[in-house]
Image 1 (tube, helix red, strand yellow):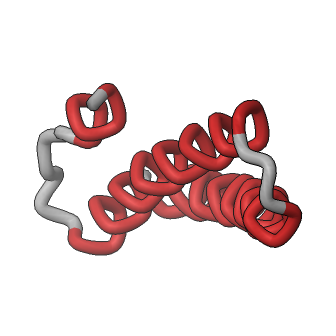
Image 2: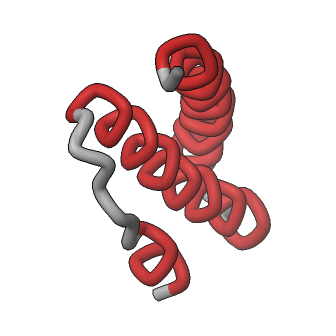
Length: 73
């Protein structure tokens, strides 16, 4: 539920920046869910997928943040 509440954001009117910011929030929710799975999940395949998701989406978020920093002027 926290994930959905935190995904709300005001749009800037710049579709590129809005997309990047929205994807960061979306990925933060996925990362949070994956961490919960790692804490409580037992299935090795699901744990591996959660670890992969965390790594990939954390990197995506860094990339989005860097892009925003260079394009939001």
